Image (cartoon, rainbow, N blue to C red; front, side, top):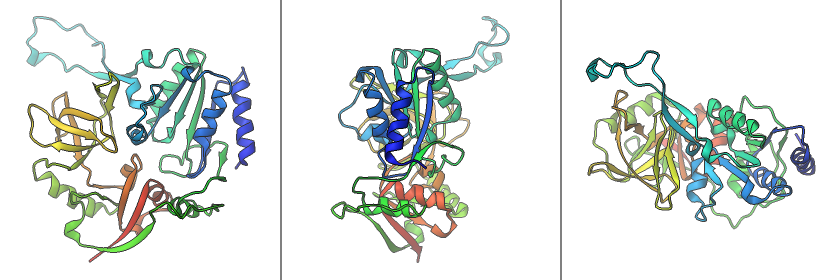
Length: 353
């Protein structure tokens, strides 16, 4: 663990060291590790030459200013058809032609030209995609700073210089998340609303369409609630989470790329296909029109999803919530409890009634 001043010095030394290209740093919730990294980069590079990549789309969606060089990682990739091993005979009927295979490749047009690349919440990015970003950045001579939370789900395999101290006033819920790892908090801002409470929850109400996010590690309950939702048509305000390993991209009204990828979450705004459903990115006002399906063998172009009104702790780690309802907190480990509390403004410990 490093002190705050030691982390600042480490980042400044890295930015100004011409022999090192990649640096990984970590911070528990409540620390300003991402801001420290950006400040260090801006001490040497012009803002327009710094690309900030985010592992959690919610921060992009909630950012109303729309910073051009602050992007969701999936936006940097494309689905590209692979060259077949044997040439396709043009006169062969489509029925007998081999199925075209696709692979995900980095869109070099969107990442080239930057002198410094900062990857925030990198522990939420699939390792192959993260490695592709780092490798391309190294090839073009860019500095790369990878920012992770080693205490979060997905951060268990990372080893990096890490800070836990914070000089900022933190919310009571952030302080509770830090306490799970026995990390003290200097000052709590009592003006920030939110906290942990307990309530009785009726089994029938778990996973219903409301303003709460239900989370459980009880596989039996998770499957039962989802099975019930799978038997009904898509409904307005229902949440779905993407299971697709394909990049599903569109262009928004500002000509910026928006991508849905595995673990992306959407809210169904209009369940009537005309010809596609109207979806809203979770924690965002960005709208996406697409065909979605619960089926694993859905045709290409149809996005594979599953109901998301109830999630597992691992699935929930990819998003941020106003209110989370935890069912079966006793079945969750230290890392899972930390992740849910860190990612929520309010937490309700649900007791089945």
